[in-house]
Image (spheres, one colour):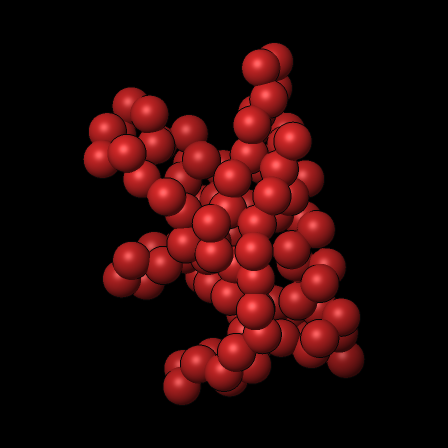
Amino acid sequence: MGIATFQLSYDLLHGPILYADHFCALDFVDQDNVARTLEGGIEKIARRHNCTAVHTTIASSGSPREDGWLCAIMHERGHRIEGLHLCKLIPSCA
């Protein structure tokens, strides 16, 4: 199961963005696959709205052992740390 709330916004650096807040992935067997699928769905929504980037906020327990897996997946999928948010640039379809 995965869930994320999002809103369309405008960023001074990236222009039109999709801001995904409260990104959460849970599965007792393979939570990594749930996170990858959820991130892919968010990117599809961003592309539909002509966003140039996805900004994501991930809740943190403060423990690198507990939080590192989701950050690692987001980095694997193209996100990078920008302050306290993760950002994945969306290339234009043109």
